[in-house]
Image 1 (cartoon, rainbow, N blue to C red):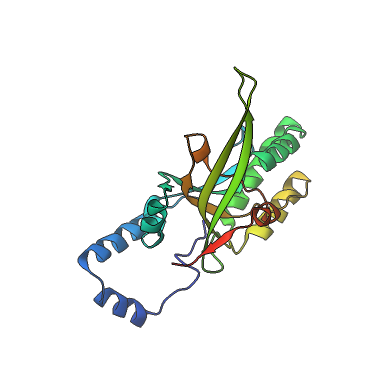
Image 2: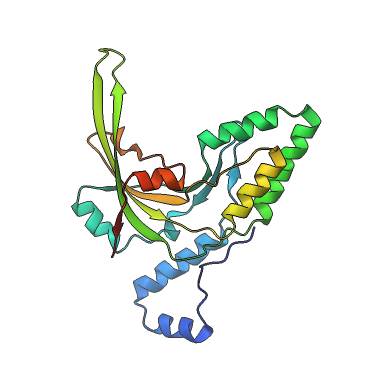
Amino acid sequence: MKFKRDYYEPSPEEIKAAEASMLDSQKTQSIEREKAFDALKPPRFDQNSGSILFDLDKRLIYTEKIGPLAVKEGFEPKDEFHLTIFGFKKGRIIKNALNAFPGSQRGRKMQEIQNLIQRTDWTLASKPKLYKVSKDYNFTDRSTGQTISSKRETIIQALDLKELLNFSNSLGQIIGKKLEPQFPHLTLFTKGADAQSRMGIGIDTLEDFQKLNPEPLEV
């Protein structure tokens, strides 16, 4: 799998200067992040759902600056992190397209997808950006039939993956379907009145994201 450590690669002189100014705790943290990068695995393709998720070690997630501010506002940090390359909605398109192929051809198509994932460069193309987003949900209580309103709030990190568009186009060619790229982001913190409200907000496309009127965060 191709994956550089950052969209910007510092020079040896910059690295040496940065290490000289680090506290012992920061050096330990840096070593742990290097270990996490070395253990990074390619996105996983779930053949049952058609979804493709990129699991990320929490040691790779930088929340040192935004964390205290988020907790002060009542947000809770997530315990696990993954980048959704294709979620369940587009996963159904992928799964249905694969199921339309005869058995032996279906197996070859699945292997083509795995090969595509392996050779894709998953490096970031620019610096991640932080946003606060919220969305109102309405649910019907099955026991009472009443409509329950719920507000979900999240702090996300929008990402720019260098090869996401090419990956989406190539996968679409494999299955014979046009696939719009997912809006790449990580959910860092969630907020809500109950566990269901703290599940996060599904953001499928860039248009979905823009409709939420995201609030940029500077830290």
